[in-house]
Amino acid sequence: MNVLSPDTALGLDPSRSLFINGTFEPSASSATFATIDPSTERVLGRVARGDTADIDRAVTAAKRAVRGDWLRITPAQRGRLLYMLADVLVARKQELARIETLDVGKPLKESLGDVDGVVATLRYNAGAADKLEGSTIPLGREVIDFTLLEPIGVTAHIVPWNYPLGMLARSVAPALAAGCTAVIKPAEQSPLSALLFAQCCDEAGIPPGVVNVVTGYGEEAGAALVSHSDVAGVTFTGSVETGRLVYQNAARGLKPAVLELGGKNPLIVFPDADLERAVADIVDGAFGNSGQVCSSSSRLLLHRDIHDEFLDRLTQAAGRLTIGPGLDDRDLGPLVSAEQYQRVTGYLDHGRREGARVRLGGGRPPDLPQGYFVAPTILDKVEPAHIVAREEIFGPVAIALSFTTEVEATALANGLGYGLVAGVYTRDIGRALRLAQDIEAGSVWINGWFLGGQQAPTGGVKNSGVGRERGLPGLMNYLRIKNIGIRL
Image (cartoon, rainbow, N blue to C red; front, side):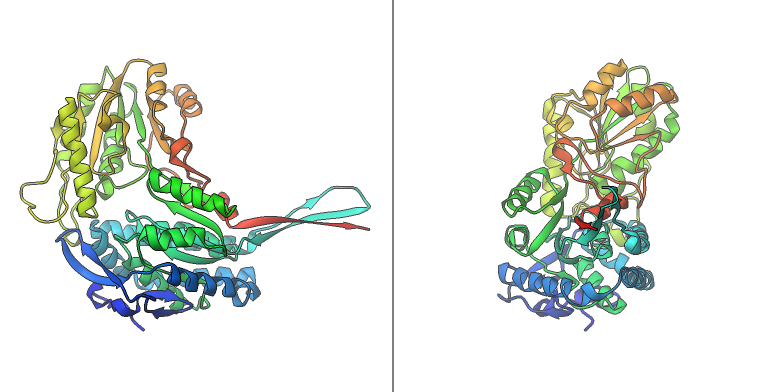
């Protein structure tokens, strides 16, 4: 059944939009909810509002699959299925990107790039599927001791709205490569691409029950999924507040949880840096995806000697960015929802009241009266104690602070409860490596932003999360070690 038409999300059948055990089914309650085009504020379509009963059906299907057909498939065969899934996504790239842009608002070119990233993620994990090896333990000639890596079982994937397809693949791909099954709860703001992904899984030949999608609200479907007794592991990306609740619910079931939470990421620029490169990276890192990125370069720590010059350059570069509906393929699209628009503009109002100066932007572009649009914004005259300097805004807003010494820069970088990523721009490699060691963050990038790739682990410290995703560490989230000893 083609749940989504090739050209628009409006072909969605809300009465049968839960993907459970290889088929699209209605929800137990028959309730639905709307998904909105943030560029126009109009309803794209409606999807099923899954609840506890639907989660139970999905988990039951996933449990049956992980003990049945999926268990009997060899690791090499799992890898081939993931390669086939990647090929299906390549063939349907335009459709997937259009759906993502309609549902989330991001420019079409960004959605196309997201699909490329998903394909790369699937292929990386496909190649690893038959290379997950145990080890032998030297206990002497009279004992043979070795380890097996086994899939943990049914896994829960609670996906955010800023990169719906990308974040889904980041955790589902290693889970499947490890031999687990998956129940996906996409964000209620952006459910469409997860449903199309499920359809692609079916087209690629992935057995029924291995991948299941239940659309719904976090407090209903999400909470039921995390607390389900047959779920063996949880992966969540989202806010710190919701992450704490997910962690608490997972802990009650003694199940592991991988959490990527918020960030208020420092990007430190010294006078000897390549300022042109730093400006270009900030334009991408602070304003890409309209700033709705956990690893956004939103908190600029600028040395006093170059503070004003650097902000002049950045203001000119960011001022050239274009903004408009996602399908118009400008540099920036709208924010994802009315709630997010109110959140971001509320922070801007708060910043003004605290005394911040708006060097660029500051609110809705005058030529875009409809849609959840916020122009690229730069704030200076910001103090470390200001709310806009301490809390994650999650919009196209960069705030600037100044420092004079390396010690002061380190203290500012570490002065918040977040610790996701950080950046250092300097030609002094000794200084860069000192800061990389001293900064409290899961990733530190030197003279570049958004570094790494499918092979590089990512994750936070402090309030920014628990665990690591991507690379080989990401695969280990879905495996347990079993030790076997034999006395000869």
